[in-house]
Image 1 (cartoon, helix red, strand yellow):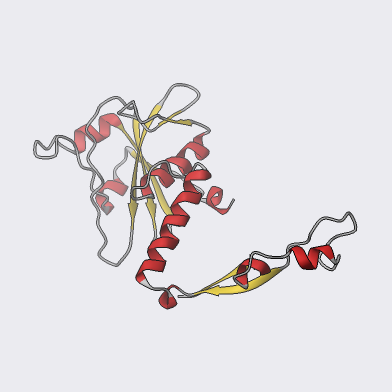
Image 2 (cartoon, rainbow, N blue to C red; image 1 turned 60 degrees about the horizontal axis):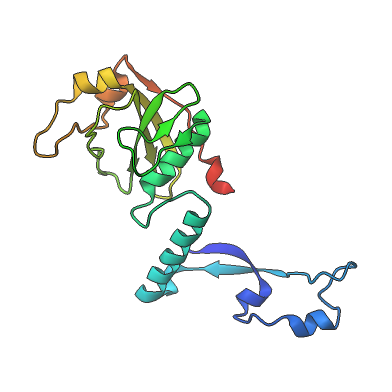
Length: 199
């Protein structure tokens, strides 16, 4: 699927040289500041080589890291979910040195964030293991293939520990997102916005 982007003309044309036109005044505003002309460019991943796609991905990850959305070079879905939950609750994200919770709210409540990205009709339902009890509730963020939030669930720690036994082979509890879980009286749906990703 191709995507239409608005890129500066000097980037779209593959040239970084705009000084000549700027000196002649044709691309300057009344204050003398060079104008950046935008041109629609179609990005079609099918036309990119594997090497180019990997380079695109690396550049995207660097930019997301610079913007504070992701914090590692790993699968970005967990970091993106944490950023959305922190924005929703007005909380702060935890550091890499602490475990158990990912977002702490102003009142001290500690949230562990779990993410799931649906990429097909029979996508995975199991979340990554919960290996610590130093949290108050789990927030489950479910994305579609294009990283749009489709669902948010809040599960208190007591409910997690009642529904899901500790599994020795993973040293943790694994939440499985099912209709039965959604219907549980102690599981609450929350309206999460991914609008922060549009910035």
